Length: 350
Ligand code: AHG
Ligand code: MN
Ligand code: MN
Image: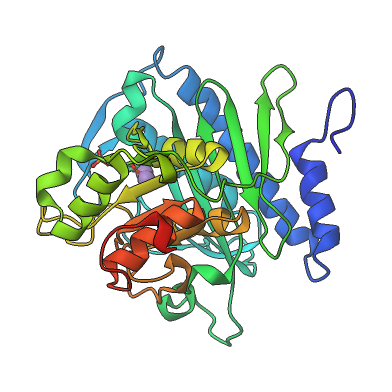
């Protein structure tokens, strides 16, 4: 349904979606549109990162004790500065800020809550590999609190009203969904006109993939069942299309996006590498939940190895979670095996 000529812009698409959601108001549309503006600014900086002094580490570490890259902070500040005066947010939470980000008193508050990973794939910033931004949007729950309470903010991922990501790669792409059967849609930024145009309408992830994505360098730190699952995907078997191809670039958004379009399973299991990160490296609120919401709408599934990511009741703002996400059949099989429902990894069992 892409029009001839210029094509459908993201703004038109969001308004069309808004008309499909009776209770959606212009507030949601302006929120998503402002996020698009922030992404355009980040994309421009990423694309000229090699030319200006925005590369390299800040010498600081974040709440996860990870080296913070200048571009992480730049992207974080762009999003906070653009979103705080909009009047649509009750509060925000960023992977780069240990605390809730409150809306300054001089600006009106709104009814939405934004979680985001301002720059995903930081280790790839200065080696010209795709990086991205991930976001999830919730509605503020009914309450007469005058200030944001953590108990209100920490909602299971199934409560998201929208989620998506931007990838700053060979082109800048935005993928988002408002759930409820509205589909997952991709837009490509045309720098010459400064607009995101519909390029991937109604993305559906293949039921089963032929790709697995995992950092095998952590193999010795995984528990035995996880090792067995990864070994299973590598073992030749015509009937189930194995061995799978291994693809892992180290940017979650890039690995996720490739698997969304072509099929496959991305895994970041819990590992014993760092006692401070027993649940693995990825964050529930800023990474796993938004992508779990997208993949579910596209016909896929996301699990922590025991159950659905979207059903997890969050306990803290920055909690980490093991993540198995992508083609439904692959992820369901891994969950069935890791949770003891099947004796051995076996795609024919699901
Ligand atoms: P971030 O840059 O936001 O910290 O995210 C990096 C994450 C994710 O993008 C990627 O899948 C993962 O780190 C790679 O981790 P390893 O280098 O440990 O495989
Ligand atoms: Mn990330
Ligand atoms: Mn990040």
